[in-house]
Length: 475
Image (tube, rainbow, N blue to C red; front, side, top):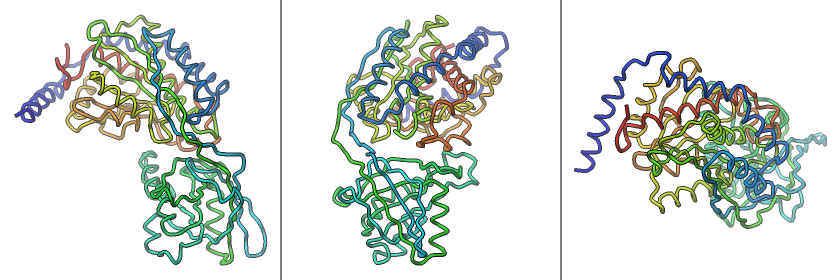
């Protein structure tokens, strides 16, 4: 009976929100959004703070001193913008890259070619931190291991040469597809007796920068070293394998796991004037890889989330609902921060009416991906389309079902819609998880547009509510 009633309410809401009244220009909402964009584009608050995060603090690997510094710094900044700021303690794994990672191709004519390589996150070191040398087997996916069989894989180095599909216009879709085929295959290679793994970096760019990524082992007793290769080195190795039957690779890394450490989620709030116990969440992860400065992944997202509070405070917008900014720790090594936040939310029986995450860099915003349960997603899409006229001057046009940020997936329950800023994706993976992910490669204006876009969405949802929530859409 409850399910039938729930479905009826959703249908009723969708019927009315799919036939919205026309929105006329020069309304208070029109003017409010213009004020938000004007402030973001004129003052560069997020871009200035991103520079400090990248240049003064730098890379923020989970459990590191710099990650702890970022927590302290961001909480100090948010304290000036919020009614309350507090830290949520999280136990996080600690992994260090070490000081030495090398890979070389040993050709049959005795030439030695250095390969651009970096250890993959969570990799074990080579035995006794010494180099290992073996023949190489190239595969396109873990399915190839089954085809080749254990005899062909045992004691070899498996080279996962998986390319992002260039025909997929959405680069995030191409990335996810290649991730499933390659980066999740390290554990499979170990099961087949491989000595180590090399993985092609996931980017369309052809350059000398390897891109790291977290790997997982299926069997804790069968862990093998895993390195990422730059696309140039991967292309060279592919050609060498095809023409040199005496080719071998030697590789070495001294990375290591160092137990766990205490870290924190940073949580800041502007209390709602009318619905203080109903939360609109804006969030991003604060940690980063250690190769670059964590600018696009995910300093830009952190600035988007923080700047929502800045814009509300600066423009003296008093929200009806509580606006909560959360900066998650440990997104890159298992998502312990997001899990802890979701656990505490449920434990305290907090009511979230919306969860937003920025996890696609500081590129040109085009709209929003909407997720959550199917009913919640569809109802929210129809509601957002009511605002099409308001968003049109800012080139926001995309309001569709899609993949949302990994950290808010832990909140996928009941009627809570999940939303991610949808950005232009063609350049994101040029920098993602590589040494090129630095402040200089974030466009100031594009970052500012992202902050204003999220703040505008929060303003409208705060004012009008959502059809799935108690009270429905407010006039």
